[in-house]
Image (cartoon, rainbow, N blue to C red):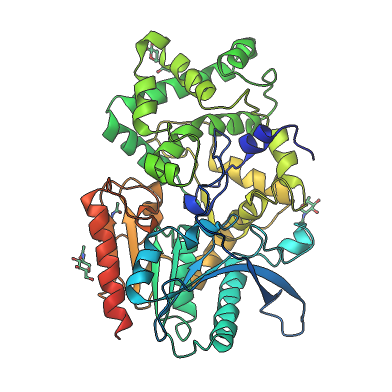
Length: 484
Ligand SMILES: *[C@@H]1O[C@H](CO)[C@@H](O)[C@H](O)[C@H]1NC(C)=O
Ligand SMILES: *[C@@H]1O[C@H](CO)[C@@H](O)[C@H](O)[C@H]1NC(C)=O
Ligand SMILES: *[C@@H]1O[C@H](CO)[C@@H](O)[C@H](O)[C@H]1NC(C)=O
Ligand SMILES: CC(=O)N[C@H]1CO[C@H](CO)[C@@H](O)[C@@H]1O
């Protein structure tokens, strides 16, 4: 399908793309987006690694080319090797020039490598994204990619006796932990930032954290959001209000609700600025070059409290208009059409189709409105499960797939050593993360008041003291572990 405009493309990306750490990301939300990421100070060469298509079938000898980046800027012979794991989107070479891991690399004299995840960015293992091709997309294949890359690179660059440390944030943070767990002979230590290590079909706690984070800004704020959302849900039951809803929210075409999927998709879409504001703080987004560093808890709560804008419902509608680039398209059919295309453009290029496939076949993580202690309504778990069936014609049980994932990796009961789990208190993903020290060798670092993956970013003068301290703790742990 050809999207009419670039802003269509932006607006339709991406339902469910909420695991990302932003710097690796180009664009992921239906609301106002990113400029291009900040420009690179100097060019970073792209490299290509010949990778196996299927690591679990010795009879399949097919290969493909996986993208990676290298920086020896800080490397001192004998130093460790730092391997950053790419996440569920195009991998930004910006990571080779910015980020806390480079600060650590400088202090340890480390060689820095960054490997893109299969099926994202330019790392295309297959001709297309048909279901037949997507069979080769899984976290287990991705870990085996890392293992093969690690072994071959150590051999070819003479790094066999070096200590390898992996880094990752969010889903890639989970991979960082699991790489150490499953391949302890290949990786010495791991920094798993904001990592959701526990897979779960339903993740209603996400929106509970959204309530608490909005309430921390202004105790009335989530109540006003709830009032607005409840009012909208009531109006959606009455088709005679559809003309005014169309106008109030600046929809591209007259609202039609033919199924619960239509209303659920619309309600989720409208909740997105609030989820974005809570998951990523302003500085995180500014770092990623997002145009809309204006979306903040404060900005949204100020708008929700502004009685000159009418009732809470009207203020909520104003937010949708303010944070959209043009009119908004809330049609589920449009979303389905976009997600169902099997080419490497559109939902293939943005990472939306492969990531939703991974949620349907491995992780769930659906941010439903099934908890009463959150501000929104109308997008229950059934909506998310139905989209797996609609997009992938999939009858398999997501619950069984999620259970397999937790059996595979251990969920919260991960047992390993030398993995640190930093977590941010206002990041909703901490609910699925390791939030307490498991052992002395599996410490959690709590960063009060920070959002998703904040510890991975380059240090700034404006950082909270506890964030600066968290980076120092990570450094000290690495220092200790690299001596072991
Ligand atoms: C929302 O708040 C208004 C007052 O601003 C009140 O009249 C209305 O009943 C509330 N609606 C809901 C659904 O809570
Ligand atoms: C799922 O079930 C439907 C109807 O029962 C069937 O048409 C479809 O082929 C099935 N899909 C798969 C992937 O098995
Ligand atoms: C976790 O372990 C670290 C040492 O690795 C220690 O400094 C910290 O106090 C522990 N935190 C908790 C909550 O026990
Ligand atoms: C928000 C959150 O879950 N924070 C936890 C992060 O990890 C520390 C342990 O270092 C816990 O004490 C926090 O509760």
